[in-house]
Amino acid sequence: MGYKVVVVGATGNVGREMLNILAERQFPVDEIVALASRRSLGTEVSFGDRTLKTKDLDAFDFTGWDIALFAIGSDATKIYAPKAAKAGCVVIDNSSLYRYDADVPLVVPEVNPEAVESYAKKNIIANPNCSTAQMVVALKPLHDRARIKRVVVSTYQSVSGAGKEGMDELWDQTKSMYNPTDDVPPKKFQKQIAFNVIPHIDVFMEDGSTKEEWKMVAETKKIVDSSIKVTATCVRVPVFVGHAEAINIEFEDFLDEDEARDILREAPGIMVIDKREAGGYVTPVECVGDFATFISRIRQDSTIDNGLNLWCVSDNLRKGAALNAVQIAETLGTRVLKKG
Image (cartoon, rainbow, N blue to C red; front, side, top):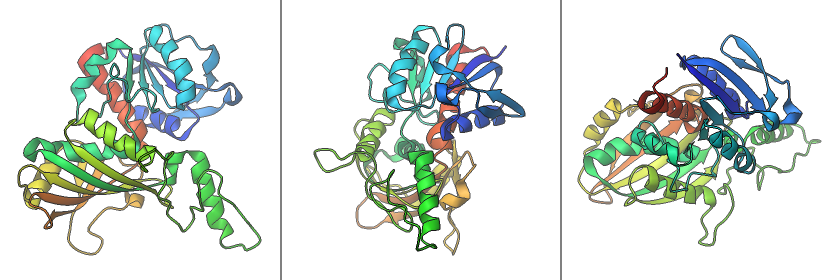
């Protein structure tokens, strides 16, 4: 016996990827429906070898459905997620709306799978920010061994993290660089993204950090350990898909780089590719379409007593969003619902 599954926001980048991953991982689905806004009504989306026509989110009754994967913005989620939850359908939400709610678990299954068991307070489970998700997968096994005191992370985040509009803007601006008569001013981003990098993701906060940077701090504390100190600089780069992160970690205890490499090789969801030679590391282009979080450039930081550096790359549409949501659904099924 399988589940009755709803994908909300099925025509967007993440919603389409959720459908792909549900099919790829053979999630036990008895019935599935793709929902979108009224303006996208009837749009065709793929689910394995099947084609689904989207239905109207506004008119949909969630009663009798088991799990709803939400891939819409916070404003719409605020309206529809409580309706689904009240109808008895467990919501797995990809927006930021519920991530910092004490009554809503924030889950990365490789890190804190047990947290799904506290979903019943609101019938909602939150999916973390894309940049946080891949980082904590790498941090958790190292934290279990040597306890992390502090993390300094710089991100190199692809434009797909800003949705289809971000990808279109990079494409259009890149083409315009080769045609002097074209002019594509920035709309989605604050400055030109083609052949440029922008150290600004989300809004600025009073302390000078951006909200994206704040998210990485708050979410790492909620998912891994509240005692870990985190400082982040988040940068948008002209890459279509795949986030990269340069992570510096300070531990309470010494951790040798070779032992760290071995620990990460055995950790769930991680692929270590770390050869000290030209090309012996993974870049965003190479991670697209893969389930893994890739770790490279593992090395001691000689400037502090217990320091380590590493390079972390992942497909942000997968591990950073759709894959993690499906993994939450799998964990919920295994640990709580137990139907599949």
